[in-house]
Length: 168
Image 1: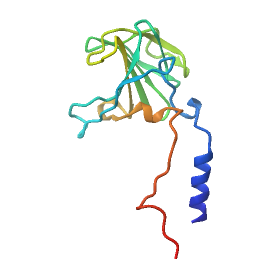
Image 2: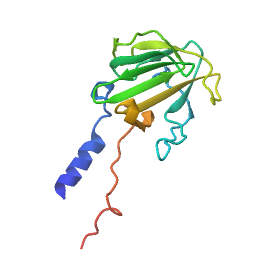
Image 3: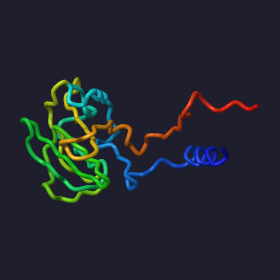
């Protein structure tokens, strides 16, 4: 029991992980407003919102949330997209973004990868960045909420069963 309390205290007091540790940074600066939240479909082949929409301005620089290799930079379904593969199997995607990088380029966390364009369907703001994250290859991807991967997201432990055990 003591080791559980010690582990929980260590995690609770630890500083937030940095982007170098695999945690993500915001792709727009300053920190943008979230216009539309992540809405994972169940099952994953149904309709849903597999990312978040962040309010921005046309022409605003878009930054790599964490370092990796550009695996796509171009038009996809009529929209300009940049996709980056990161160590560990994570991929992030950014749209609509006029790419300033080429496929195969290594990018560091915080590197400018392009500029935000107007025209993201369903966005209430004048310009929105659709920011997505997924684990694994695109054909079998597990989409995840990129906001949960941010370096500023605090980690909280929850009890496995109904709370702490009562004392006799």
